[in-house]
Image (cartoon, rainbow, N blue to C red; front, top):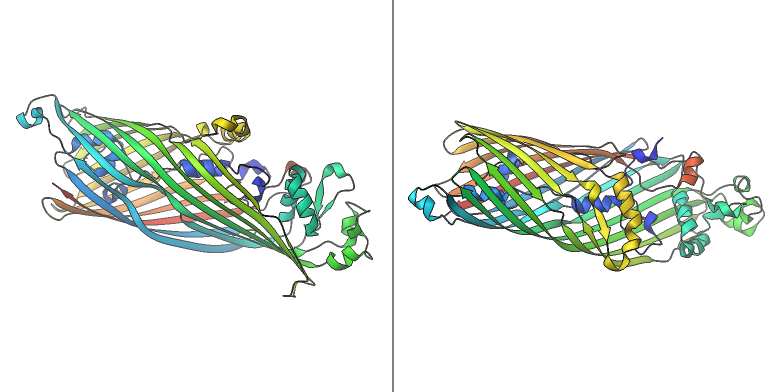
Length: 519
């Protein structure tokens, strides 16, 4: 097995114990994700925004699209997000779900026609200004999976931590779940039985969102060339909690003796073995994280009409420079029982609380998008391609520059640029009702993992009066990939022991409703 094929993602917590910083590759990707917020109209068409104008989504999409407005516009978009997740962990299937209501977008566009537009002359027709609130990414989710592991123990992971964290080494040695190898240079090995049934459960809950407030301008030159810019101010809060549980047995004396014949646990007559050898245990590893931050980015957009029935659009989005304050807490509890059928523990170990508070910066990817739209008598088709430079994500802190070189080298090595493709269309069913549909393919930012991420959408638009409109959309996204609940070092890999794998199928269904008015 090539362990680089596995995403060691948000579910890994203890791997970061002993460090003042808890930054990871997965957090870098999570904080960089942009769902390209939009109105229900645009979402129903597959979220194609690069070469379309005249929708309030242009504020956060392609600001050049603001130049298409001939009237001012105000709207709000409400949504309901439902996560329905499936997992296959060690042959056991699990399900979890979580849903929530929210506001995904609200904004206003002010139309400022020029004298040329009013008089019917060539030149600049307008310079419009838009302000909006957008939910870039919704972090709310719940993932639970469980299974029976017959190959490794979570304690293997904890012995790795003991090798590089002396505080944790002296702490966890008192858990009665680890012992030194006879050759002390090899570190520690688990007293938990590795090659026998162990019930393992991983419960991960994430909350929060990444939101932006944007101000944009867009101009129309001679109804042929449109240009605009957006200044985005980001605000986000991300909360993550992980509880990993393992239930198993401790080793027999003869099995301990294979690694350290001089250990007290290798002597069946010793007090330590009589009390803790061949007993049942329950291990609970708890990790929590709160990350809050703000940032700024800029977007430049252009749309050109080579003919009246074609639009060609381009957008360039700078990295968002996020300033983040992060707090993490982690601890491990172990309870011992006389046997697997007992509910009454005779000894409980509680580790120290491992906490960190840190301020740092992260620069998200550059984003480039190119799109084209073809208009027909009663509708349109639009397609676009978007490229994100995930391998340019970087952590930083001016006062601790060198401490981020390791994680930044890992980001460069494990991430790559990703291409997103979106297609969609709209058809005028009647003079007041429009039908919409679209499809998205989202590229994989990881070099060494296999991931599939696609979505489909449908929608309807209603012209309620000359000034009031309403839109509805339904977007269904399917994301499949593999993760491991903990990471093992090369020492265990060389011994033929590897992390257990969970195959995840995450499904997101988003129902949206937009109500707006032109004035």
